[in-house]
Image (cartoon, rainbow, N blue to C red; front, side, top):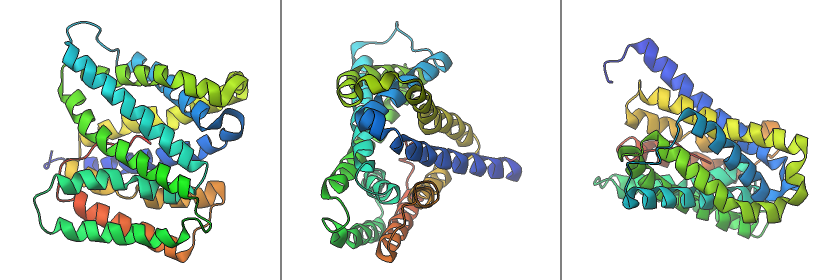
Length: 289
């Protein structure tokens, strides 16, 4: 992989950046559905449509997998539910850039915990400083519940990373992702229907939900898998640290969510910490929110 032609590497970097932009545009589109379908209904639509598309691409194997594999897949699906539901609930309350910054604490914690380098303590301190810069705004323009939900989404994301590695290396392969997505959609039906009600069946809502699924799940999964064939995982992880910055830009350009100087500095510190930590570990998986 390290000997890949330079042109292939440039193309792979472009794919990763396209995947990041796609995820954040999908998140911005999701916020437009909250009034009609609520966060729970929006997550249900995204997950259900993503499950249909991914199952068509990677059909889950129903035979040849033991109970242990199915339990891991079920846990994987439960993490998807917790991660995306908490994240969308946070998006209803706080700006996109801040929500992604707080959520990124999850994979950053996994990266630092998986490293044996004392230097990673510096990255942890830098990230903590970034989070502390956001603290004065909590309750004063920054919804406390939204902050807590974004951090909870980060916790689920961290668990997702650890479980995704087990699924990907197990007998289920990519079909395990499809199976987990189907299971997640089933789990989301009660909360999604309760939150969205009849609004879930409106043609415009269904079409937007399909768009969210394509932008937030299907397209990123596809381009990131292709990029990982050309890039070292370490390089891939560093590129992922740009997520909060792209989220802030999309929030400003698409949703009109401007951020204070202190909040922008906090995002910058978390990005720097993430890039530093992820460059020293291979414990990286593609973001799903």
